[in-house]
Amino acid sequence: LVTTDRDAFEQIVINLVDNARKYAAAGGEIAVTLASRAGGGAEVRVGDRGPGVPAGERERIFDQFYRVDDRLTSEKGGTGLGLSIARQLARGLGGGLRYADRAGGGAEFILELP
Picture 1 (tube, rainbow, N blue to C red):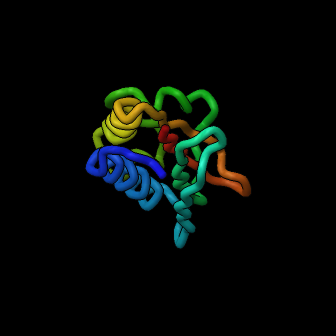
Picture 2 (picture 1 turned 90 degrees about the vertical axis):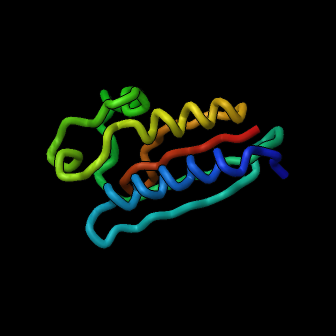
């Protein structure tokens, strides 16, 4: 059981799913999972089978207006604010938002809630 701000939670998840939709490989898979966390709380994982994020960019993707500079992002719309706002909202809920490589290839964003 998690008590949280529904609007903030919804905004975070919508942003993560929208990013997965944009960057998943053609015909790609998007997975959303919800699980309990050891010690309480929950985590939501949004993963795709896209190219993932280069190692040197993984923290910078949460900076305002930052977009990975490559062909993939240049072809997609966006301002580079979504992940920054999502992380800020997650922290406002007492949780966090982080990136991980997805097992089997792709990207995974993990929303942790207390």
